[in-house]
Length: 334
Image 1: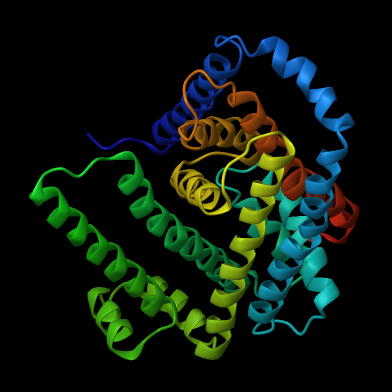
Image 2: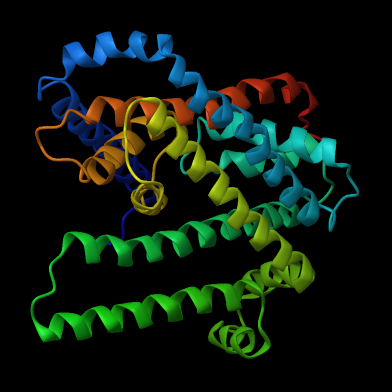
């Protein structure tokens, strides 16, 4: 029996609510039921009074404009194909999109805010270009996350049997092939791109129309967008590491980046909204980053606070800045 659109919408909403509630319950178990409550509440003010806190917090804060500045540069490169705009306009458009994304599933409102703040005459094509920018960031997250996954299982799983060694070697090859294919598809490598087009039915005119929009972007531009996405990933991952250190989570840099990459990889696969993203991100971060420590070590509260602070710096503050440009929106027009 085919489900109606209303039933599907209800099921999707119920699933999202369930994920949020489970994440919050996981945080409650990790932080409050483990005896961390007093340390959590008392330590919060203590960290801010600690002179060492500023040494990590200020660089993380200063990296926030770098993070979104790179995104603004990416967006301008893509949006130039539908409208001539300055870097300042592109950055204001990005900030407006962040404000919209807080209330929409999987932050799809980000593209809507960007498009209508620029008053582009052909919004559909602009949305496709915005999706191309988001896809580049997802590819960067999956690339680093898949590499981190290989490091993660080598550290936490003992390979005693010979078949396990062969299995891991096969896994390495599989990850390498998938990452290579993702990059080749995005950059429209001739052989791979042609094979992908053959898989699409000729009658699917809309899909071919969407692809033709993306094909108008030169490979050189797409390559720059991918490189900026990789650089931006390194920036916000390092911000996360700085905040972990600020809240007393002492992990070597390489190991921390592996665990952070695992957190971002899982977060990419979970459907959510940005306002609920904090709880889900916190639970995932506690699971992976907390695995570095022995069960007796009270690290959950520090990880949660670091996660919350990164969320505030990289989403809440830019979203507030984006509200200043809401007046530029023009959704209903001729």
